[in-house]
Length: 144
Image 1 (spheres, rainbow, N blue to C red):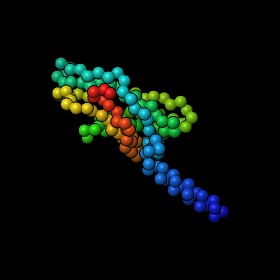
Image 2: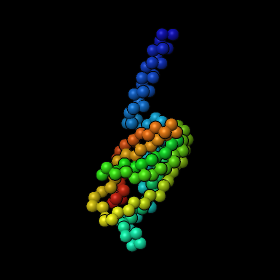
Image 3: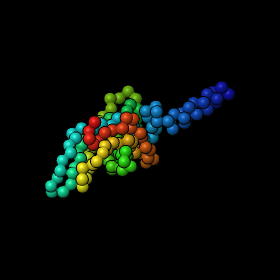
Image 4: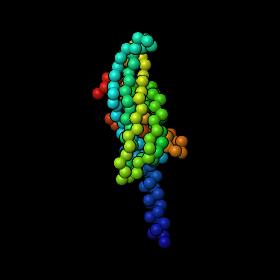
């Protein structure tokens, strides 16, 4: 009985340690996904008098990811882009379903440097938000 108790305590400690470590791929309680960009364009819109960066954000949940929402893309320049992309749960052995969101960013002048998403903020069904680092960062402008 004593050995079972020590085994349970050890398993709980390992689980808590893994929960706080994003190097293992999954962040418990919030969806984790592989992000990519499709349908990229950068144009000048004469009607709105601004430069527009358009793309489709594609999120493929990782196996074992719970459902939730990707709220924001966090950019390398400190900015944020509101996404609010719903992610379906994906079981450990399931074929995961992609989620997509069309994104439009406007600029008064063309950006002078690179724009990269370095992380995203996600929230699970418990509404607790977590930041998930993108390694490597996702290039948005110019498209890499």
